[in-house]
Image (tube, rainbow over the protein chains, first blue to last red):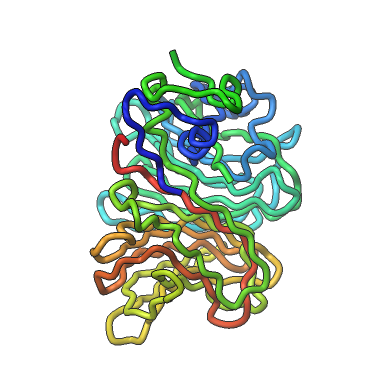
Length: 189
Length: 197
């Protein structure tokens, strides 16, 4: 549906407001800064008891690292009361600024979905990533698509959590102390 | 003062344009359509690329969810204008990395008879997901796509596709199909606004 052009001084009916302004495709669920080695999303979004609800079918998570004590891999685990640590499948490639390509994969692993490699604040190439999470709150498998700027290049991957569990939230898991900011959006469906 | 769009505005009330805050007006991406389908040999998404207002949108995002096939065929995409689906030269690069770590590539290039964009392999029960960005389908330019997809079975993997068609046709939609059998799934289309209205 195309947007409706409005002129200054014109009035909008209830219908046109619904057509024009309530169809935003991404809806901010919440966001905050984080710090730690295993950070639960329920602790980050103070107003949201359960980030994954039936209101939005799928989600987009944006993560920007601001500090890490040591370079380390960052993973995302789904949660339903506790961290789910099984049934993760992911695959993709990292390509460094020096054109070195590395396959990244995990088959039925417990680590979670790989988000990328962090870096220390001694450099300006910190990890930033967008993660699309498909239907985590439905009692079917959950899909992922990850696109990231890693410490030394790009990283793209896809994956899934192959279990029919309804998840309500997630954790960011890193072996080293990590700080950053994140925003969680819901895709309108 | 920002307006609470959901709570503060009721049926039969009117609102002046001047009252709307800029955040609401410029919200993007815009949700355009949501379609669920079952056991379709071809699924046409018609008039989603908004031909009548091409100055509003030129970049679209397609989210594919819960996609299965009646066989383990390859999900394919063709552009369309109205009910006319284009079998046209499609040029793309495609990289697939299995969850076990095996990498493979394939190409759609001129002269090979590749008349569609080959996306991901489907499974009969395990569901696949993905996002496809589409650039300039509703303008007289080459239409470009960039897709990141996740296949559903534990023996499959992720797929990255980037490509373009090879003509300057205007397209208002697209068609999904499988290389064999039928498809079942759900597709949502969003659009990024070009600028302030």
